[in-house]
Image 1 (cartoon, rainbow, N blue to C red):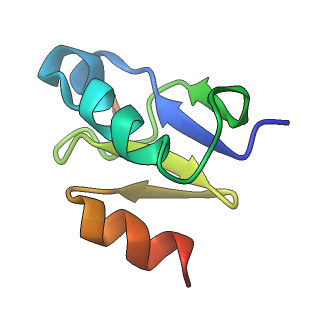
Image 2: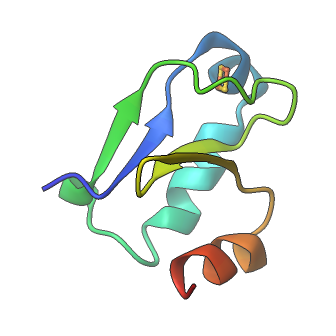
Length: 70
Ligand code: FES
């Protein structure tokens, strides 16, 4: 079951942030729990994910930890 979605939009993928972000996500989720979603509207920051129906730009492993453990 998908629990978190990585933005697959052009700004994020061109910036190369999503590969980094996916590595961070794999600390908390299995490969099967990570999906994709079109542009989430946070293109200016990249590092975008959809988690619990909200869009976030997660720019560090620490920020991801804070979100997951909320
Ligand atoms: S391309 Fe990722 S938020 Fe727009």
